[in-house]
Image (cartoon, rainbow, N blue to C red; front, side, top):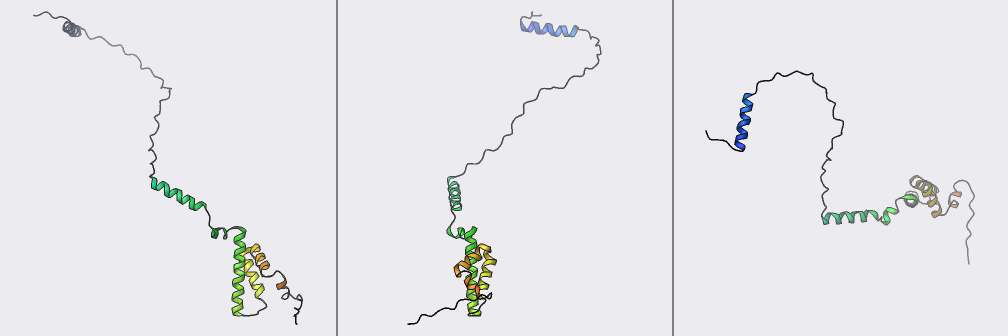
Length: 156
């Protein structure tokens, strides 16, 4: 038999030693309870999708929309606020005056009807604006029993 040298020899001797060993008797020991790990594990952050980049065309249209929305036109400013109530009152009063002149010309209730319509549509502000525009409380005086001054004619 050829002599073994180096790594082959050590490998052979290990195999031989394993074969010669006797089975050892194993002592049974009680199982030990281990403590749970108290250190926190590192959590990995959620990967979120990156926001899409907008194209130049979409960006431009958004800018144009916001610019248009920001600038209010003349029509929208006449519809809101105190000015809107004044416009509603004057419009309703003049509309009722027009209708009354067609239905009952020279009627004594036309000023009351137009002022009432102005109050209903434009509130106190609209009614007051209509009254001021049509000549004030003087036109309503003859209806409520007040004596209106006779108008003098100037003759030559």
